[in-house]
Image (tube, rainbow, N blue to C red; front, side, top):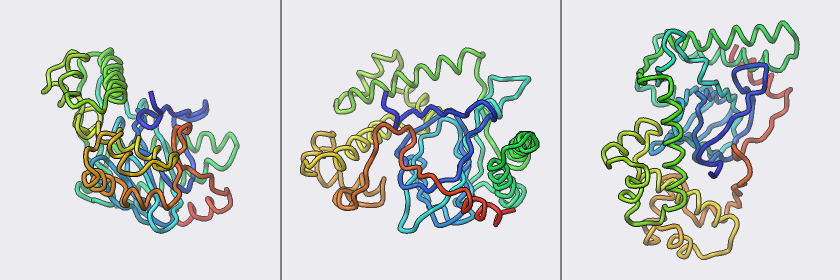
Length: 306
């Protein structure tokens, strides 16, 4: 299964989160079990929560919920971001571990406002980022405390939806089903009758499949197929000299006009502009386009939000 769809995250052994400051060029559509908190420290960043997108600017904070397909890319200005990938277990109810929470924390769209200013979350996130650069027993406990403070604030001050699972095995079974669906689509995305063949393969009705995908990825089958086709085109545009019309046909877009429209809507540029820009999609990186940033500059930027 290709890494651009499902990302496994190595948190290390110290904390239930992966914390880092980075400059992002491009992170193609992917999903993971972690909740991902993004704070833009400098510049701006295009965040795609398929099929929608928004531009995060300096000071914006967004929580990407568990198992939501998303992608990141740079705009016309450089960016520096604090990324926190929080293990799903941090958000479990000890009395009922069969619940899944979908939080509304997005300072860009600001559709569902939290009960406190967004600075409440940016300040705690920045403090975690600063503490992470120190390696002492005190900082170890400080980070643990701040992580749970952040989670508590998210629960207390943001609105959220709850999904109740039937039993503890349901999440495992559904995760396996989701992986099977994605693998099948990756291998058969070019089929005209993929809905019928996938329903037979997975043993679901079309309506059940629709509800399942929307619940777990916020995508319809059509949108999932398009996202996979787009990833194929990114590789071919950057790694081959094939004419764009040939790439459009081989990736199942039918006409050049359709391909150009869908591509520009997803990435903010035409296939030709993408090829000319020299942007490279590196296949072997689980998270593409994350560039390390110096400790000294990261600390300076983080202190602005304390």
